[in-house]
Length: 505
Image 1 (cartoon, helix red, strand yellow):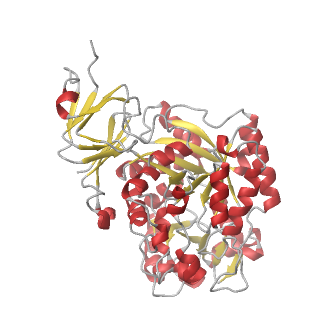
Image 2: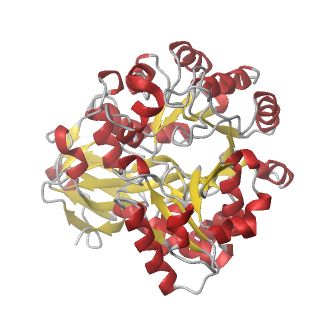
Image 3: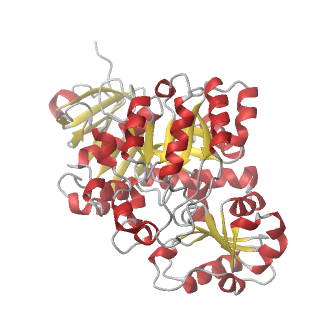
């Protein structure tokens, strides 16, 4: 006799996103995994006395979103510190920071997420932040997390530790100078746990059931594991440790894919270059608006090759940040020296300006392209990327279809700018340039099974089929029927391991 299901979801539009993407009415779950997908009549036979029955009321059920590149601490910071996203200019940034200053006695006044490329006004300056406080250090971190503006107090107290080349003047700092701010404002274990708890709530509300988290310090992994042991973790977490953890990770014997169903080791995260916003992405041709600049090596090619070799020898996947075409080439050179980069599923994070040759090399090596479709918000005709790159390079950035056509494994993530898969899917389907466009199904797969593959879980994650993890995202509308407005589709329910972890009011 077949055992009853723990929960069944009926009366929906269930997309498996596997194979030909068959569409069903219902799905049954037992012990956290899918036991049947089919029509309402057949699935209802698995209902028993103790079975929970969830009426989807016609909503669309798809595999849970896997955000293949995010920073959960930062996501949490938006809810704790000043949230600068959507600020219309320097005046609104300072107003939000002043509000934060009035409600906390912390040494630092911090805000996250401003984007000056959307402003009519000038950039943010030290003088703006001096109005927030002349006694406490103040920092506004740009959305890309590679750029910040600080006040005079912050420069006076921490400027000596900042590399001269990364202090641009008038309070603006980039790269290693921003790292000084991060180190000075390290939240510590207790606050870190609060941040990741806030972040998982945000993730669940956005339909995210799994994240590949790029972690700077050891406090976040500890917080996730504590939540897991307590049964309070509602998002699956794959931990990618900053490269300065490599020796410690090797010493304690961690390997890629070690862990539980909820928290596992990903690999080692490293940088090569910076960001387009800060003119620090490493490009082969100068910036259109800075003819003397070709970007910065955050980790130079020789050091990168050594690091990749060490991580690969230790059985660790590598996730290498590379935005500019020169940076992408440097990462591929390092991966080519590995025994089998494809078997290790080494990744390039962002890969925005990869050349045709680089895409072909990625396909040959089996390297994963871990990309962020929400970055296309900067890639329109009158945009940051137009300023930095000019029209030709702007339109050739983030060519998702080229990766798919070349059979490069493609995984989508948000880089928490913002953590919102449906926004990313919207941009991938409705991009500024034709070369960037993919279909709705392709975009959804990159945000589900693409991330699952990048995390070695394609056999149980990213699809709705028998035996798979019961991780679902339920939408109040069909992305296939609302291609022009996918960003306006709402998440009505999120399910992890068969448990409803978010339900819209």
